[in-house]
Image 1: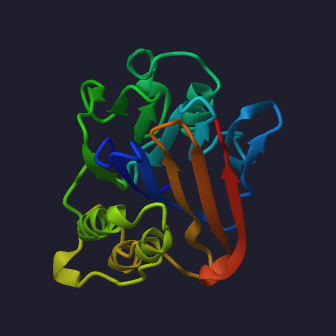
Image 2 (image 1 turned 60 degrees about the vertical axis):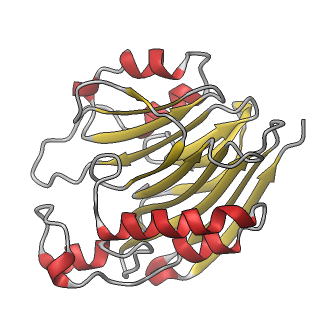
Length: 249
């Protein structure tokens, strides 16, 4: 997952709203969002290479999503970052307790968002300590929370503009589909070649081998109903499939 925008307790009827793109090599095997056979209370996509997930939510309102930190040349961690989200979704731990117990040195650089309906937590093994986030609109890509990358600033603004129309979702998917490339003078400097900085500067990334694999709009209502709507994509941004999961309590 390379871009996540979260609205936390800023809409009276939808206390949790998420719009997210997962960017990955197309060759990496993946399952689209669905209920998990080993835990039917949890639904989200699955990474078939390491068994984790980039984003998921449970019927009880446990939410987790992860991105990597872009740091070329760094050695790889022993464990998959997708295990962080998977294990939280299948546990009963409070988000802050779970975050504080993570052995950060076992993973490559990550950003992790965790929620349980009561608290939203941000943590990273590139920051000193987990943070309990107050109500607000937050964004994370492949640097730290709310880094002023152009695509993240644009996504947060479009997300803010889309909130009043909920439960209508078109504006959220429109923002996730934005393929605009940032001007060279405004690109972040993350240590990758210029052609990759350009490619990755778009909200929706597309190329023959690497790009946005899934766009997800997720929300929870004040009375606990959950909806996860995912669009999946293949090479060069070709449409693959759409998954829709919702609950009523």
